[in-house]
Length: 394
Image (cartoon, rainbow, N blue to C red; front, side):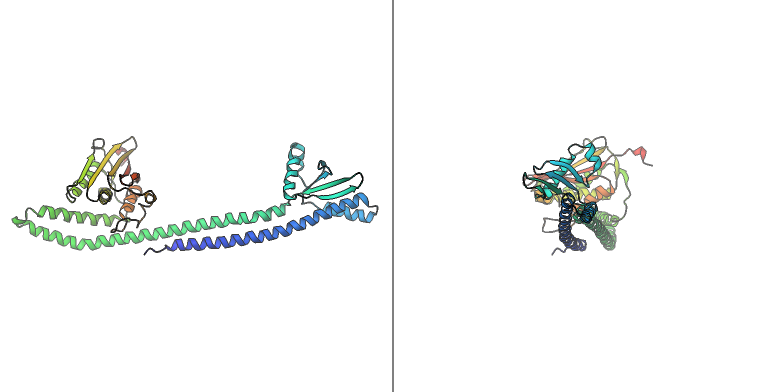
């Protein structure tokens, strides 16, 4: 049964908290902005009424009060039009420089205000003939800031969640890496004792001539166990890269796998272009990658088909393609084949390709990926190894 990683649980919790916070902020901001918008409407109506008083009243006290109300509006931008909706030129709280330098500025602001308030506030000057001033107004800076606040908070919360998730993922992956490295080293330690014992028994068998035919084969398998132990022991440690000919490691692994598969599997390896090419390798780990790819191909062809290994080079890289004539990989699985634990087989832990990718990309600074796959026709895995000039390496 699959379990959800702890970091994923935390990610779900963080996302839920973020949704609650942002949703609450949006609703509250809308409530506050609605109240501010109503207050600003009242302030504009009071400002228009002050204009009426200034135009019509003869009482100096009333005119003084109206003038004070009129001059107190320093935030809300207003544009005045006549009864035909033509701009009169009377504006307040607009950008003075824009008014002077941009001839379309006033028209654009009027269109913006009309979208914000479709019905203007009307000040009737005369009934006959009908003359009036119409006042359109926009949002104050305060109202704009209140409306932008949820977006700013959303960005901050998103950044916080992103940082938290990255930190949790890094921590989780680091813990997983340490766990797998510890398991691998413990496996190597446990294998060491029986392998040493087998070596001892092998020496005894060598002394008896009757066993001459089976001793070499047993020796190969014992050496194989030693190699496996060495591989597991290297997990979690930085491997030592040496100058080697990759073609030799591939030939060695192909020959080994040939003897342990049925005669219905056809192995083809064309090393014409890379026969003498040297590059920096960890031979045990590189052979492990080739073995994993061949085993993966054998599972795909189910004991009957062809495994073709083709190699070429360019100025920068060595390219190795391992192609099988097997069942192929479904498109929805291609992105998952290198994930630890992913497998479509009934047996196995789904670690072979994941370890292979790490060996090539992390230790050898190369690339390993699915170059091509088609269900029912086969799959090609490509290894890219960087070529380095030997004289540059001290």
